[in-house]
Image (cartoon, rainbow, N blue to C red; front, side, top):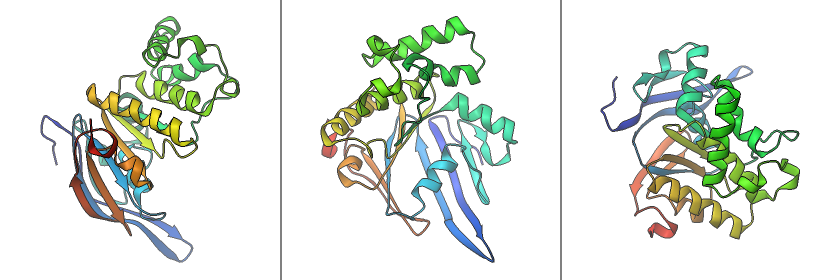
Length: 240
């Protein structure tokens, strides 16, 4: 299976099973999804629907039991673990609900982490990390540790870390789950702006008001996609 030039993701018949003692839990039951470069997609579904499992497969954090997955022209389902890790670090930026910032590292050191894995020299990675912080208006917080920052600022640091390697794809797993409504609006506005600049975004959420920022909404239930709809342009409620 090969992807066309503007196709970033081509997934076909993805199945993911987890052994549970003598039984098997079928997290995904044959999911197919195509994502073009520059799209902004919200994946929605109730708890246990398979949405996080799908995001983990898309993000190369896990491998499918069966099925095919091509990311940026690379057949993910055929890669060895070290090749998978290299592809993940090069092509994907992650934003998680719980931030995953190192508590003893300051903001710029946290943003540098993907560049360390990419073996970027120290001076260059510091420069790149500061650029990412400046883009988000956080350069004055570069020396602050996570416990010196608000929840919204910590999530923005996590977004800077996701952007620093200039990935093909940004994956956001419940990125506003630990934030108040006003801060959530600010974070989602930032993600919309990133998409409008050409970044491909896939967001997982169970909240309709957060999903409303994405012009394409994919709903998943019991390990199957039950709908895939274009609902507007990027922005709150399909607005710009």
